[in-house]
Image 1 (cartoon, helix red, strand yellow):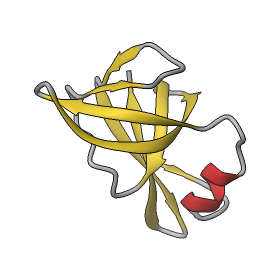
Image 2 (image 1 turned 120 degrees about the vertical axis):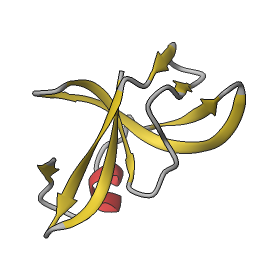
Image 3 (image 1 turned 180 degrees about the horizontal axis):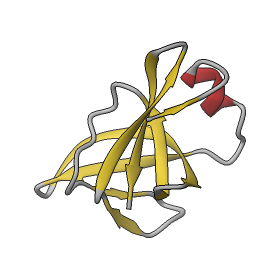
Length: 89
C-alpha cells in the first residue's frame, strides 16, 4: 500500500496522458475507466480511481495500447483513505 500527496481524482487529473481503458472479465466488458500507466517498486501498473471494478485475471485494453492481463492489485491512500487502485500487469 502506498500513499499519494493529494486526493486520487486530483492525482489522475494532474496527468494529461491518462486514457480510457476497457476492463474485460471472463469475455464480458465490465467497465470503461480513465487510467494512468505508471510503475513503482512492485512493477508496471495502470492506476484507476478507487472503486473501479478491477480484479486479478481481468484484461485491460485501450485504443492506444495493447492488452494487459491483471496479475495483482494494490491500493494507494490519501490521509489514510483508499484513493487509487493499481492494476499490475
